[in-house]
Amino acid sequence: MDAWQFGAIGTAWQIDTQEPLDPDVRHAVLLRIEEFDRTWSRFRPDSVVSAAADKAGEWVLPHEAGSLLAFYGELHEATDGAVNPLIGRTLADLGYDAEYSLVASGAVSVVPSWSSVAFSAPVLRTHEPVVIDVGAAGKGLLVDLVSAIIAEHTDRFTVDASGDMFHGGAAPLRVALEHPLDPTRAVGVVEVGAGDALCASATNRRTWGEGLHHVVDARTGRPTSDVIATWVVARSCMRADGLATAHFFVEPGVADQGVLTDRFEHEFVRMHADGRVEWSPDLPGELFV
Image (cartoon, rainbow, N blue to C red; front, side, top):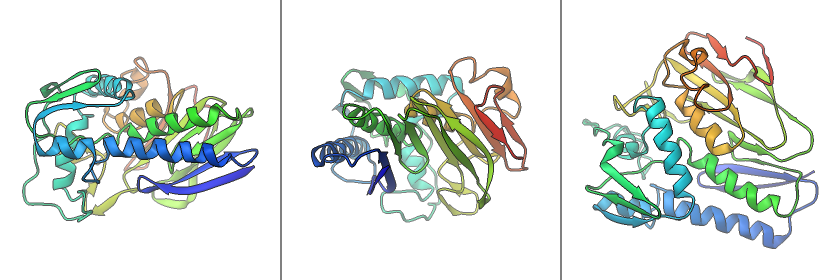
């Protein structure tokens, strides 16, 4: 297998294929990532998201906005508002800002209601400046978009964007689930089938202070504390990514009662701060804890 490694959107990527991808395919991949970042990044001043942070108005969004924002609406409803892409200013106030200051301000902004904006493809209408952060599902969507480009040239490939993975290979891929408190250990192994995606999310991935990390409950404006890691297998990376975030916010034990599993087709694992681990009955793998 050929492994193409590169950095983009602040993370490491690896695309595995049987033969090296042609230069024009690699160019198309990098161009698609750049286009996505130029719309959705709150860390670059020339993005649409940065423009919407400065003033209210109407913002023309690309085609993928339809599926992304519709999915956010589903996640918002399923988590009683805990997942909300208008959380960007709150994250910045907590220290996860465009300058990566990693210093929390004295006052933390209240997250605007998701109903305060209106989207009618392709236009997003805002009535006040809002800071959109699509980190809960956006990187997964970008992996799906990149995978679609690769799939036009080969049907045997894997795209891995540091925790968000889509597998297009013929045989299942066995992936270890890294222990969030000890990277030398695994909490289990799952098999990612052809056409499946795996997303891992953990509070230790972006931590910059006591109780400060990137998984924030939009209802309270504070980082979550009970769940410390989640893993989701689904049929798209966007959905795996978003559901991995959503599993931080359902009450302990509730996941088995169908709050998310009845609404969305997926398998999951989640670990609590006290070491307890929950997983779905049909998880394609095994747990060691």
